[in-house]
Length: 312
Image 1 (tube, helix red, strand yellow):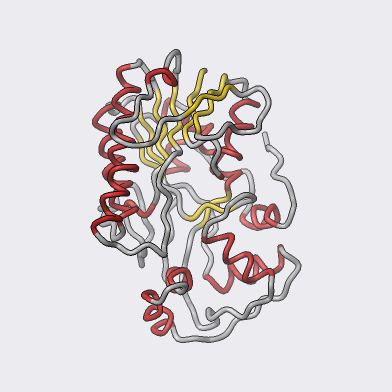
Image 2 (cartoon, rainbow, N blue to C red):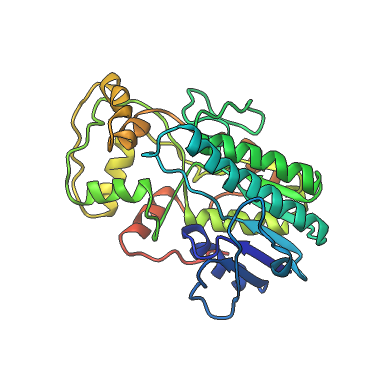
């Protein structure tokens, strides 16, 4: 299979490209800068937006894995300019790619969305049937992008993946910030938090994408994969500290105080981690028979220098 991967110089792609190439696929990596992986064809990606011309990159392609996006940046305000930016890049940009992919004869379009297209916080497990109520510009743009993919590709040619927070070596986003704080022994205000959160290691996400490309049962489906173990934020910090060879330092701060700090610059991450956001894995298991090849603990150990080896 010849597969076009967008956002090929990004964090998720750095884990996915070797997996796809190792499966024997012909991989065409589209990015603003070429990935440094031998044996993978590199093409220049147009700027993601409504005017992008993807036709040269799509020539001869059987499948598309669309990773490129304007990432969720928690410090950004939710003003009109931010909303428009996310809609232009994530929603309209994805719509343009999906439309051109359909016209080019692409038979499978795997779109990496986000569970934030459904909710940013939730007291009950999210499933593919959960009614979406995104509360951020990023989440709204991802939901609009999903709808565009459905409209262009039809039910038999798309797969939508809504992961939780993805972590692993090379991640420079929120999880990396938390790992830095834990690794430097900074006291964290989660000692009184009792919540439930799902996570997904990058190696597990790469394995899940390859399954979606190969399984006919993935066509027309929406999946919310995770590592399969939900943890509270204090449990996460203890596990992360152990993986990094450090001691967890937790301070019992009331959750109401953490929530109130969401509007303070630099404290948005702390507020977010105090809430719950977890995913039901029933649909993933029943539809694909997929279980993550790496445990949550193994995924955390990769952060401290371990390498994710592919499992059969």
